[in-house]
Image (cartoon, rainbow, N blue to C red):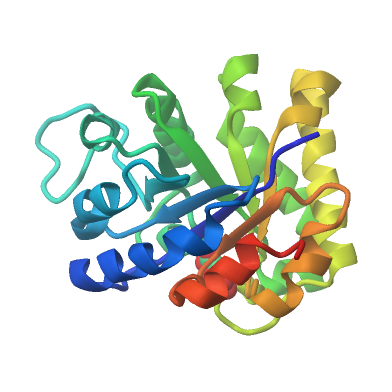
Length: 250
Ligand code: PGA
């Protein structure tokens, strides 16, 4: 059985005092879950969040990283830097970064390799636009993103890459993919990984769904055969709501 991984993506929200209050509130609400609980927070919240979540089952992640270890890259933060303060996860290739910050399949691939080099667990985002879905190209586009993202990874690395399938038209729009459509895509992703790395690896890879996940739809989505939890944006900004998503089975 694959573990469910429920990750919050705060995006560019939450000052440190709010982050600490959020985590203090979340700790008792999720302490009994068997699901993996991750909060991907802005860089400025990382250290405070790591301290607030110390000795709990809440893991802290970043939302981006550079692939180089150090150097003349003004404004960037490396995987080694994240690891040095105790960060465990990092989102790579979120559609907002692909759209607004020129992230490409090639930089995504470099960042994943660098994340593994420094012992971080990458959460890699893929997803199609509405136009691509309407043209019937969604599966082709997304499985192609997967192939490019994983290029050159070892079996072990591929197995430990968390994939977040996030249809771009469902992010922050209130429109969620139907559970059937979301499951169809996560299955297609798993088949692609099976083709690249074999069935054993494919069976073990965590594939999340993301895009307007909330407490009212988490259960139906996360109960599908190939959906192993979610990457949650807007609904992760409220501790009670996020806890309900983590505890979706109850
Ligand atoms: P949303 O964002 O839950 O607000 O749609 C998801 C994401 O961008 O990861």
